[in-house]
Image (cartoon, rainbow, N blue to C red; front, top):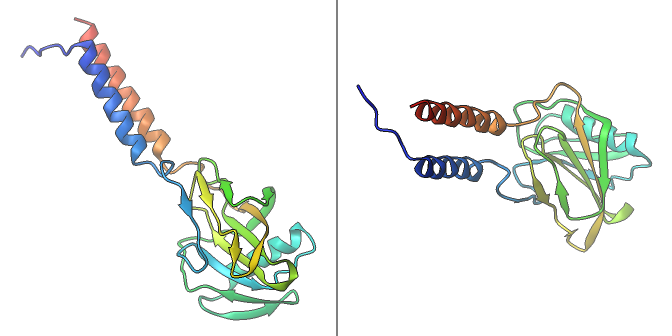
Length: 189
């Protein structure tokens, strides 16, 4: 059986279309806006007054250990755990944590950060905590909650091994090998 060779121009166009389609369906393509009470909310810390980074980490890890939909008191704070269940909640760690005050946050390729601690209204309001372990790219957080403005945020990484990518890189690499094999097959003639 003799196969008809495909022209280099058509092959290039096909490879470009396949790569564009794969990139369009990756989770890096769209920015996400987090909101109070959305599906990524882990919980809320009333007042959320933290003296240092380790206090913020203790607040996040306390929320992780709480039962869904419960209220608890610890570290001189009141904690409200959301009703959102997540597949796996590893303990947060300080290593590699990042702080900022902007409403746009770049999470990178994914898997680098697991929790986002956001303080609103100084000592007058509290801190929202979101699970961001399944997100990547740029996210946006609210600039204010009611009349309480954003004071600052902190990202925490996972305490156990995390996969740095959701498979997009492996998928693109595999498609590249398929394209190279196809090109090689037709150029040998």
